[in-house]
Image: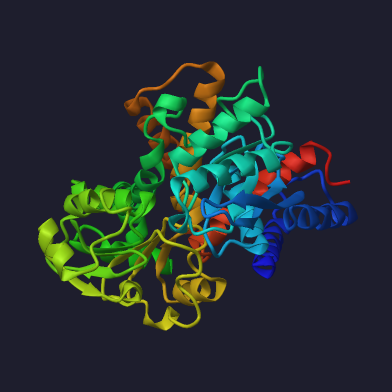
Length: 459
């Protein structure tokens, strides 16, 4: 991952070096030195905080749980990023995700820097009381680096509004008399959270796809039809026809994305497959997504994985291995599970012509290059899954002002923000041969570089 981070920065800076409109005051040797400084600053985190949480279990044992909080860059504002609860969490992963948060916030012009947290646990293996202790310990151990104006954590894989409520309560207790509502986002509405936050990432993921395939293509069909751009040709080949959709992952992001697709009136798409950690469910005629959402709500988030469960829920589907969803013969693949799902080992078997990344880093660099060379349209994580951080920003604002937006106001601001980003990026994407991910990276690095230069941090 570290090599991939450095590659992203180097490629973006190489593309900007010869652009004389970018930082025009920097010339010759001064320009070379400034770009070397940018490379060093952006390819490394500012701080890595690590601790072992001492946790007494209900059975009397005491365990020590590795945990992290990484601060990548705060040029644009306080550090911002989720806390991942997963057994695969490690320092390299959290550092890379913090880097991606920096770029994501820069791309969408959200006034936050990039941070990320992680706790090496399988939350399903702990009782609620033990999880509460984990949350309390995390805040105690990292209290010195988090806060409304320093670093604002949020939910991520394995965590949600309950955990954020617990953590904010502990932060309030430790920092008595200080502002606390903006210390964590993704909280419950009753505890100062924002309406629409839980659904924000999934709604944003689907809106990105819908805006491209319906709004943007229809508005620009004439120009794109004569373009030699390979991605324009792919997108147009899928426009205005029925599409089959598969959604990998059925948590907060995947389930909302699937439900948005199921209810969409703009595009004739049919969700034929969904998957989670246990299985893939497939129905060529389309799955009953509302019924699946209802089932997972009362089964700890798990999809039906036996014939008996399907029958009792009244759902028609065949059960297949969970990894089958990635290589199905479908038009659109939404990736809403974990990182590194499309990789060197399965890239040649991917049949979807459009891939939308709801998860963070679900496509490796090798798979991304291979699929892009084939003309596959990939809507990358940095663009598609920013709904969560955008609404987190709105929640942070509401907490500071103690004035709260309606659900409709939150949704409208989310869509307006993502639409603005798409309108900025898509013309460039369809006008040059770079994949969309690289276009997004270049735009983010350009904005970060400009701010770092203006702040005098390149010397």
